[in-house]
Length: 127
Image (cartoon, rainbow, N blue to C red; front, side, top):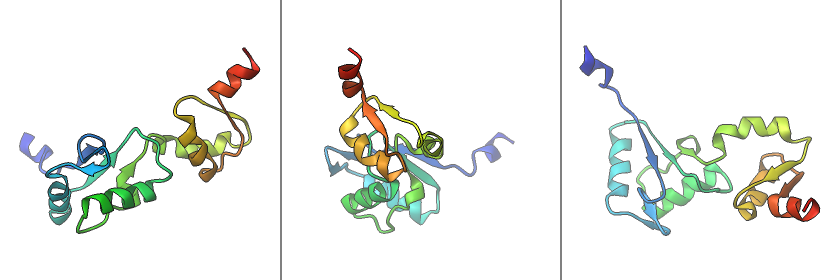
């Protein structure tokens, strides 16, 4: 039966522009997440922005919204979350940072990456 297939659903919700905008909670975001939690409907929040860790982003969003039940670290997916397990394979080499390097420079050491170079630094060495 087709209806049975959709009986148990979960949500994947973008943080930026859906839950918060410019550091402020959007109308209805708190109520929606509180409702999902209350009804035990699974959900994940994701962002393509760099944050120091999933744990800190969960706390930041929870505090910003004033959620009844704070977000758990495992409910937050950052832009690098899917490849975190791969970072260990790269930690003995040098990683080239392409993108918003000023934030990645903060995040990489937290994930065991000590040797990295920005694209700007690379271009200066190899013009």
